[in-house]
Image (cartoon, rainbow, N blue to C red; front, side, top):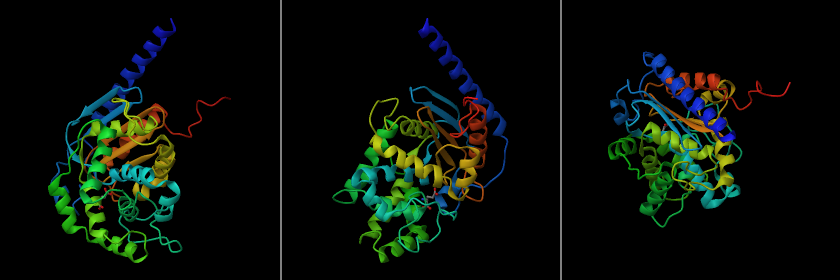
Length: 324
Ligand code: GLU
């Protein structure tokens, strides 16, 4: 009897999740605001009309709508995962000596370090992400890249590749990132081989994913680090709270505070137009739509997540279900 009731609940939830994302896709498809990122020449070529939404639950159900198979480069969303790998490689105490956990309120590519500690503020801004990537262990560039790609494989459940044209495009134009790396080298926050660290950072940003992949990666974080489709442990459970905390406070560029206030779930966006959000113990959400607002967040992505959070009651501090 109980089983039948649970099954009924599950079916209701499933059909309502699909209905909600279909609704939101129809509602925001015609929204024509924002511009696609063009500071990396290759990114400017993307079709601005692409639009997909995907939800993956911690019990392995996947709901999707739109251009779900369309591949794009993961960009800044990769920062979440390399942070997890650096934590596994060195432990949180050491990583904290190299990268802080304070939100900045500044743009993602600001060339600033914490005045007193000389650390980059957090792993979600570029300086912090470059420092984080430089911590990834390996006996050489190839081994480090392979460890990163293996990590993505665990989260997604299949092989991933670096888009060489986006990688080389960013490598030849990423002067701000290069400047940050030099500044951090000056203060001993990263080690000697900055070109290798920058290459790995540009490569991780150029890993190709689709919207479904992102939702499954988010669901893996929601599920204590275990990929809900393959059952594989992608990252040690002990680091989930560290990863989600910095996503919550720093993941949405200089919109992170307003996002936490309105949407209320840990998330990370990237200049590719992707947003990945994690509802702990419940689901991962991904939206892909390339046109960005002035802070670098996908315009449709923000709208969809705001409304999803409201309609599904996802805000972590929502007390409407609390006891009277
Ligand atoms: N590869 C990009 C950069 O470093 C990532 C930017 C982003 O998605 O925020 O500029």
